Image (cartoon, rainbow, N blue to C red; front, side, top):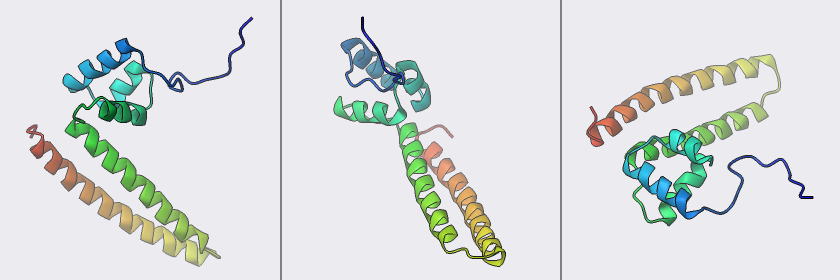
Length: 124
């Protein structure tokens, strides 16, 4: 009798030839990253890593997602650092205002960057 552990669908290591070919086809047809990940039952990071290993060009639309994710983690780290110094409600309110201001800046910057990337990709 074979026992199995609770593994997520995208926790398997090896790629079969059919999966690699399907990934190539999906990249070639400019399928969105999240959809590609869902279809292949892999994480978005695993899809990007395998695409690079296969020597395929990462679609521009995928690059925007990666930059956004990296920026999100940096922003969360910044907020975590601010919250570490909070000792009372007055300081918490000050941090909330700083975060609100930063979020407004990010919204404006993200909208501008998104438009630039659309234009570069020839989709505007």
